[in-house]
Length: 329
Image (cartoon, rainbow, N blue to C red):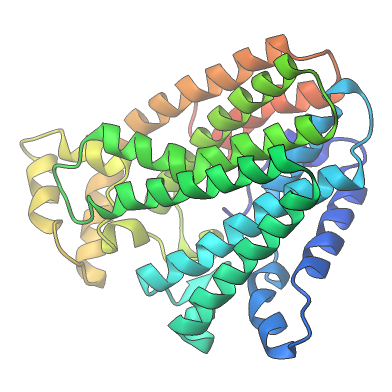
């Protein structure tokens, strides 16, 4: 999600922490085989805001103490899981671009992309294991949740009758669970009390829900240059997100017109027509209203955290994320 603004990134000292993140990430994907190193590091060097390790670091700082290197490593483990899932997603979607660069599958082939994605998951698991059995078990369960979320999405591919419950189940598994885990790892490794760790997990999960819902909205209203990937990609691939489901639910008129287009792969002209239908109706605004519920839940969780600059950053992060999609409150 290119161009996202968040108070998490403006927290004092975060520039130095992000340098630590980059250093640990690059170190984590180094191997004795230059070819594997190049493939495994492809999306690492392509850039990104590294929000999952940032979340772990900020979560660890709610007690007012700077995050340790182990906290950074725990956050990087979450980011490597995310990157590994992207390698696999791009194979499933037959995607050509990611973060404005050629995907691994497009450049090296599907087999290499799958194995490199597996390698990133293995490196993430190795880091987690070094941080203790609780973190290792947590990350393993989260990888399982990601798979469950993706399966839920796949089973409704090209399904114009997809229930909204399916959408929420999917994004909670494939996106929100990893943010919840990043925040939880930050709290665990920092040695915070259990009540605070649970609260951070609630915050992270709700923040992750907002993150994915904003990403889905931007896939409708944004442009390819900003997104770093083709706009309307989800509809083309038969993944019908909340703005689309809300437009389909409108029934007569826009809903029927959109339903007549969907249910199968779209060419460029059909994609543009479908985007125009969703953009010109209330699906996007309706999805944004639902996202505000998760913003409120993330903000409410912060009331139970210690007073600190890090807590203030967490409190404002979800709302800033939604505002970045240029959606008025």
